[in-house]
Image (cartoon, rainbow, N blue to C red; front, side):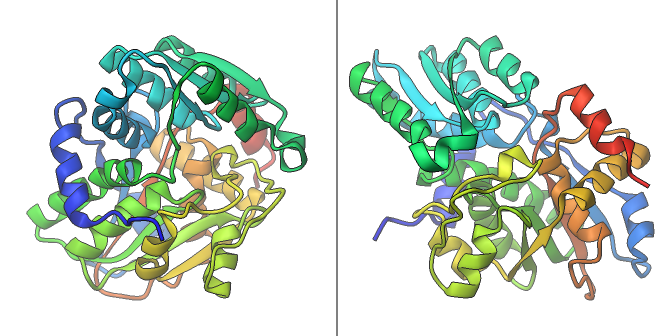
Length: 335
């Protein structure tokens, strides 16, 4: 059995993260409170990781992982596979600590994710995502870089340093709402490999023990919901959705014990519902979210989550890295 990250690990990670990053904003959404018809006194908060230097939450785990592996890395490069957000996060961490980074990305990743990753000095190599479930090219390429170039391999989610680094964002949520004397009834967060949710679940459960922790997945990539139902990790061989950041085959081994214990339920959203949410966020908040980021708000707007309760609702907007032309295409036909 793998070791499991704890709230103590998250608190230790905060000391590292604060040396390099300021907290991502926690924004009260008056518009979402009205849309959901909340009773007076309840509030909705959006934790918007689009404000980080790489446009997503992935920087938290990447910075913490890199900081904790500096001695092991030495003069060797770092290799990882990523749909794009961990790529730019690890590239930023490499720039911060003066380490060479090599990333394996799907050839159809958003152009903005390629651009951001390269802007921080990382080298990018691509693979065909459409056939990867048959060829295993992504993992093979990453492994060959580690073997042939003596690189240290980083996981975008299945690693306790990544989980605890990401969890610092959850501490930020808890600290801010405790400071305001608020209580939380629901915490809503996307699940892919589980690095974001696992870290945040540790912090939220510690700070607000009664909060319901709700996972959100695309209906075409619902391995976590299937895992919850089966009581064990389930693999989806060919996940599909416009939510490119939520297409992992399964949740990580280090993530699963935390998710199984802390997450109350997982709901599925369709791509049209996600497009509707992207348009809603743009209309009401002026934010151009990537599909993966908007999926959580899609779950709320579509009524997939029972929001009865007396506390506040916190929803995570995990990233905003979307190409403008794709964004316009996805929201164009929304009613």
